[in-house]
Length: 383
Image (cartoon, rainbow, N blue to C red; front, top):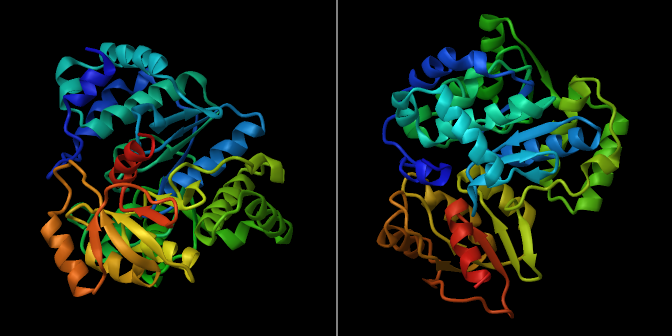
């Protein structure tokens, strides 16, 4: 079965996940993988941009580098990047056929969409990479990406998200994510002190070593970060992701230049499509707070929709100061919240809303709410 057909047969989302499946299957087939140095990225927000900053710099510095991120916006192969380009579907098709030979029919059928694509990416990276930057999916300790032995874990800001799988409080979520650390970690500045408490406890239990960003960056690094941020027009939360990526280079004692980070932004992270359109794939409270901080002082028409498991009322409340009105875009996905529920929240917050139909070139738009929202908008935008 061809890759796209094979993946389409698998559900993207699950109400329950068998956390024993990926470790069990990988243990059986691990001898087929010749893993490069793996840098694992966990957290709630900023994993994708941190990974792409780091992967781009490593590539520009002469290292064969892969970056595995998820989900994709339009095409599946956006998830797997190597040396400055997304990997072609033709190459992934070849690796898919190899992976089917390695797995039993039962194993291939049992693996979830994300588990299978994780193995696919790592099989490709095994053949060509010095470094692989691997982004966790929804979790940490039980994530499919956590089965691979890694050299370093990068921890982006942690907040509430995916509570059904990770726990309903910051302590539970933090401990689940941080238990993915194997050896060493670098932690970004956190909103909640409990995250640091969890990290210290895990250090004690597992004997790992962790660093704050400030432990690794010196004044010259801060000056370089400012130069890169100015050149790339980075908003504050992207600048923080850049700092974490540079801290990783310092951990490995890799010298870098400002130019190594040029043109390294990941699409969909406060990306400007045109003079009047910004898009961002953020879809949780922490992302909304970052957007508010970056865009405060202006107002936009918010093109929006939300998964039903997200705290969309709180997200809209946070974004209200920069919302002129909301235009609800149609998304066809079983996880999307019913329009009536969104409308109730908008009514309660006294935010005017209508259905998204088309773009008015005279108005400014912020497209925000998930990868699915951005994907649906791009279909309209590109006609």
